[in-house]
Image (cartoon, one colour):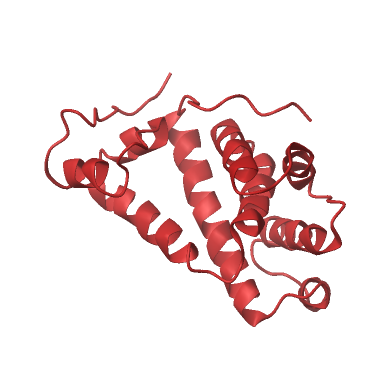
Length: 176
């Protein structure tokens, strides 16, 4: 059961109403209805995710990070959501499971998942070897910066959902 009030998009006022009628039109998910208690918090999410839509990491690559980190943080909501989103942007169901395990058949995506988990496990203090392995897979400095930014967005949503006990409004991801 959620611990924060949920803002009904139909009766929202002010900035929350603007967000629900604008960038989140048709996307009235439970996480956003809870975040809307603070339009500033919702704006943080929108700014980060919007900026990352222009990243050199592709949508499937960003979903690999979201899935690996969501699983590592035991965020059922995010795992459910990013399993659905991942398949919508081109990951196979098997790849969504692999990403959650942090071990993928595709060598480049495997390096990405491993790097995201290194960021997580080492709290950002990745080793030179971690960075070298990521770059050896074909990633550049821009990708490093974007992986950290995507990790930060994942951490934000994971922790928000933990605090709120957000109920998933996505199909349950397969057990691993």
